[in-house]
Length: 347
Figure 1: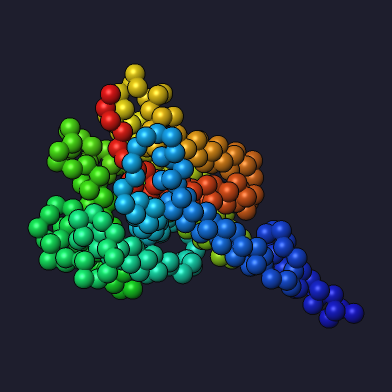
Figure 2 (figure 1 turned 120 degrees about the horizontal axis):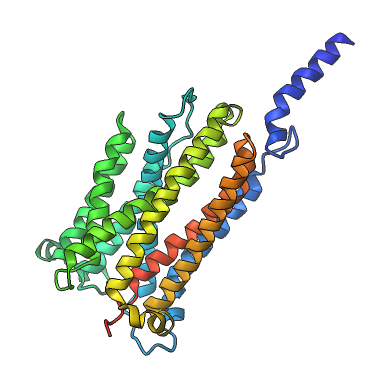
């Protein structure tokens, strides 16, 4: 009888983390449900850039660039591939500042993200190499011509930067990925603001800050949640401390994203035309959708912060945080859509 009781107590203690996660002991931990959610997110993330240009341009009288849906999809993959390693490095930096932080960390997704980013960057470079047209065959691609244009050199920079980031992610010093990731951010900012634009340096600087903060914010939260899934983090106070620390920094990042986004919008849409262009231009419609999604993300983040404040268990704040990740994924897709739509005219 004593041996049976001790065995039952030991089993109950071992199953306690499972109960805290809301799962029944001895059963799979919701792997099928997570797989379905990921599949839905990937599908939505692909449909938004693929069909978004047609929906956004409907009734505006604007013409879409050739292959805008495919280009938007490639840019969505590129932006997501930038967010993943940037977020991992950011969370690892935060974790080192948590007192008594466990050494266990989840397996890095950075090498896979770099591979996906490399494929997307190669696809975008092939479009630039054919004069910003979708190539019908490999013979249409003028690789040597990439070195002769500004956009071509930026495309090559992104290809090389993703290749370097992937190799560094597999090296003994993965933190060195920060350098090629920074090069990608600068290349994207320069590409979005050609020299013919009014005040291109100001626009480039705003985009660098906007894209950096967005990548840290959107890429950091998934890695925080993955870290909290490890037993060492979810069963100690370090998990709640890490989530709280991320929430405080994320508030600053959100403020920076909002400020630079508003400033960039006012540079492209004068204040007296913003309301009209938000509904009458494709760019404005996509921007309005992004604003609404970011507002939803901010509300979910506030909900998670309030739940964390009233409990020391970080798992209590994970539900709204997971929803926040899902909406952030759609925000990335809409951001990629913006890069494929015609820039609004300054009325």
